[in-house]
Length: 229
Ligand code: CA
Image (cartoon, rainbow, N blue to C red; front, side, top):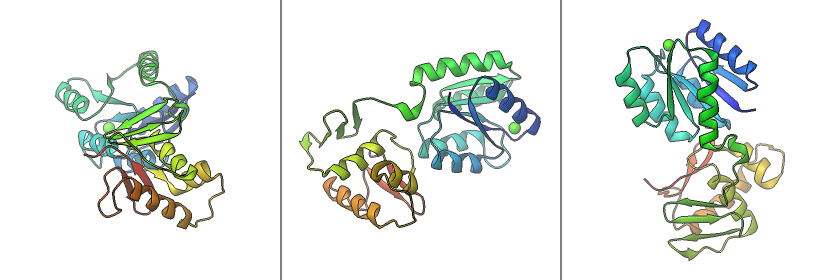
């Protein structure tokens, strides 16, 4: 079972996709604009996005680039027949696969299964032991991290925070999710704990909130860990 986001403005096509994906056993969320899709991808953990290239608010390739700014989620773009040039630019912008409309649900299922197999399926069960982002190396099994080969002295909580973000690189993780996952507390809207730990972590990564390299604050939303540009 995977969490799939369908981004499609045509209500008939959207309903058919939701129906087909639900039948395939996926948990499906559907939106009709690129802006709504970016909001979903920035705040929820998704396993797959099916992105229509012809959306009313943003050019599909631009939408894909922005999506890649907040998430590494696998993306299948859906395009109209004869739009091969947009397929090439979409793949260059970070799409994982494409499908030409109209497509059968069997065809879609085959593409989805192949992609999820390739990308390791459910993002929430990602169990790679070592995450490398630029010069930062996080060993999840050994609970240690190095920056440029030098060990970083981290408290247990700092490591937990770093590890949680590192397993979701490039993705914006909400404060609520971090408080619940790292601290095991229900979220009560008090951001101080997390901000304090983030600032300690930053200092150890040799950076500041104003000049982030790895740890980025997304104002009003949460945090993101990514390799430096
Ligand atoms: Ca469309």
